[in-house]
Length: 442
Image (cartoon, rainbow, N blue to C red; front, side):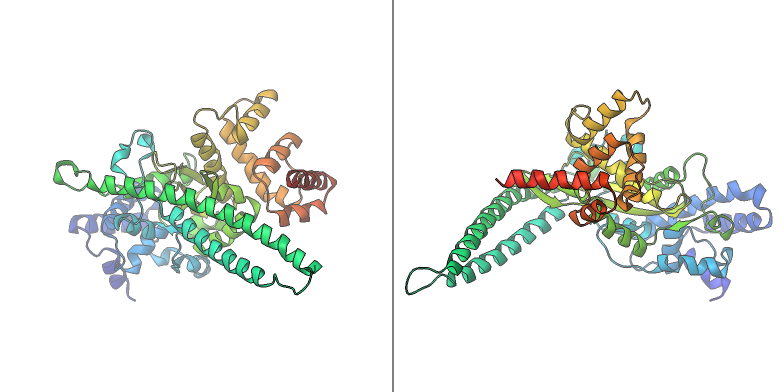
């Protein structure tokens, strides 16, 4: 493809004056980078918003990659760097991880609610927001399927209860299995009732929101592109690389690239290392409910939680932000989930976060050790060590923190058992878990 064709596709639908301004400053920036990089950065963001406003499923790939990666011109990248980012150019549908272009289309199509601006997250008029109940719906269907499987199992067990004389020992074993099966069915049915009540309520709320009149008969402006810019700015940080365009000069400082493929692999590991952060308890029933993860461009130094829940809807999914191009290895990925967990615990504690649960015990630990500063910052640093070091048997946490995390952020049993063979410290914690389970069963 020629340079002319490339930029025709990138700038398709953009106002002529902005096209000319962008191409002019792009050339000046290439000729004298130090003098024009700030002006070029400004016009980059103007173009970014213009393209974001019009993006849809049929937009050219050049525009999608511009929004997704900050890719202005492939010639800004070496052959090796083009190879490094190749994985990010593959789109695979997923309802947890989104590249920016995919996210904007999903918000535009009404599949996902718009994000609130950072400064108004607490002030958004909640009655105008819809209620996302898709994950409760999925969990409800899953529980119905699970109950159906258990019903079939019980029918098969009952068929095994027969004999001409006294029942054999084998039949008594079947009786035990039948008792267990009935107990499981009762538990599943209770979960189904709770989820159905929650689902019915959420559907009613969603219908009520749809019936609300639109202000002045006009639909609200599409503000998500402006929120995305705030997100990128926050991942980069005040002292980070502010230049928004993708170039090999700055990619040299990048030591991890969070393509969707890599992110999904890390997410599967996270399900074993921190399963409780990906679950929500609704009326005593646990459901899998991960936050949305938005993968943003820019040379990022940190990941973070944008909103732990959606507005005032405690059943709505939160959203976290991870920079695709990380200057801090895997840390931004874990950091985002750690901040999400802290904020979610606070949100659901209804003002008692310093006294109860994970945040309460961790806060008391900070107080006892006279550690000053933001509790969330201490927590996120320890959370990163928990997942990146302690999960691999490398002891980096204070004993008290390890015990708090083992209790409230437990690894999957398969990980715990493996750790118990690595060190006496983990062996003690694992054996304590097993003793507690035995007591609970009796």
